[in-house]
Every structure is written in C-alpha cells, then in structure tokens.
Length: 342
Image (cartoon, rainbow, N blue to C red; front, side):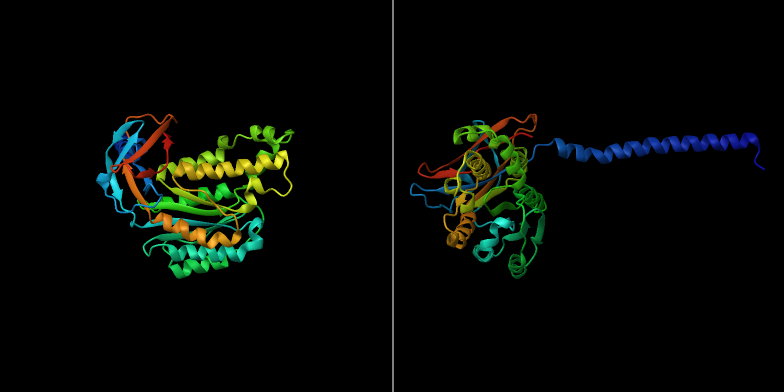
C-alpha cells in the first residue's frame, strides 16, 4: 500500500512531466511545420520556354544565356537558369479516345507513334488517354518500346473530358520537377461538360452574332484552372486541332452550334498562346503524322530561361506581363505573354 501523501507527490510529478512533454511536442510540431510555411509563401521561379526565329521565320538554336534579356512589367530580371535547345523535355502525349475519333483511330495511333520517333533519346514521354475517363497508359520512365505499345492498345469511346485530361497531365508533370515540360494533345476542343454549359448560354440566340456574344469562352473556370497550373510549372501546351471541331466547317451551321464550336476553338487558341505553344490546325486527316513530327521538331528549337520575381509581391491575382528580347535585333523571341500572380 502506497501512503496517500507519497501517492499525491507521484501524481503531481507525472502531471508536471506530461505538461512539459506537451509543450515541447507543440514546439517541435511548430518547428516541423515552419519549412512548409516558408515554401508556401516563397515565390518560385518563373520558367519560360522560348522559341527564336530570324526574319525569314527559321529557327535559331545556337544562342547562349547572355543573348537573352527578360522583362516583367517593364523591369529587367536576372536569369537564374538557362537551358539550350538540346536539353531534354518531359512530354505528356494526350490521346483523345472519345467517340469523335473512332473513324480515324488507326491514323491517330500511327501519327502518335511518329511523334515518338521524332523526339530526342533523352526526352521522357508519358501517354494518357481520355474520353469520359482519364487513364495513364505509360509512365515517364517507360521505354520507347513500351510507350509505343501503350499507344497501340489505347481504346475507348463516349464523351470528351478534355480539361480533366489536361489537369491530369499537368499534375503528372509536377513529378518531373525541374525538367522542361510540354503537353501535346490532339482534340477537336469540344469538351462535353463545357459544351453543355455553352449550349445553355446560346439557347435563346437567334443569330450567329448573338450566340458568339452569349458565350464568354475566356471566363471558363476549367480553362482558368488549366492555365494557372501551366503557369506555375512553365508547361508549354501544343494543341493539334482536328477539322471536326473547326467552326468554319460545320455541315449544318446554326447560331447555337456556331457559338459552341467557335468558343471551343477560342479556348484552344488561348491555351496555346498563354503557355507559349502553338495551335496546329489539321485540315486533312492524312496530315496528322507530319504535323505531329513538326511539333516534335519544334520542341527541339526551344530554349528555357527562368527568373525569380520579387518575393514580397502579394499573390493578388493580378496580371504580370513578360517580354523576352534577344541581343540580335534581327531575331524574334516568342514565349508566353505573362501570368497571373496566384
């Protein structure tokens, strides 16, 4: 039997030890969380993929870091990183396996395989298919043989969830850390969910002009989400636009259909322009293989430069304009025009 006084002393000591442990544990937890807080509030590098051409439009691939100057909102920035045109890329190849591609599925697969053949040996490629679902078919670390096989077995039908697929691809690219990054997507641009929203917007339109004014393509939340993710990583997106989505080729045009197709094509153009890519319009299906190869060749003409914007600037959603100049006045540099600070 422990005397009552001794028992009380033991209880007091235990309570004291527990209190000290709780305080220390809370301090350790706050210390452990501090680096994450710092990471969240520190402004990351702004990465740009830059293409340079001469007065005849021919790519120039022999420049160095000292040939470039970067300006944000008119203020010259210090270049922290530079990679030449032969530095490897990590690329997500997005394959549209919705019902709209069933009639030319084999051509699509052949053209995609040609794209693989045109890449450099050190480029890493992931293959993702999409319809109503988004599915990864090959990881970045897959061999070219396995990647080609992934293209071969791609299949599906049904709806087109383009913006879910783009979001998925951007999240896959986050794992590639500091590598140069790009997405190549073949699509008509007609995302099923977005088309339903657009259809409701143009329901009362009586003319093409009314339909075009009724839809605000740039105000789309899914589009904004994709552009913001691409901005943060410096991902360049190359849409290859199928003729089936061309608003100028509608078999039975009407105000509602014209508005929906024009908005879809406008969004594809926005994705290419905002990320520094290029919208490639496919006028004939037999052009697909050549155009895929041209996109792969275009990747090999891009430099990558990165700079650190002011760290004390608030993330207030404001637009910041980017301009890249080359030391040689006869050369023209092309990259994304800016970003929203979020």
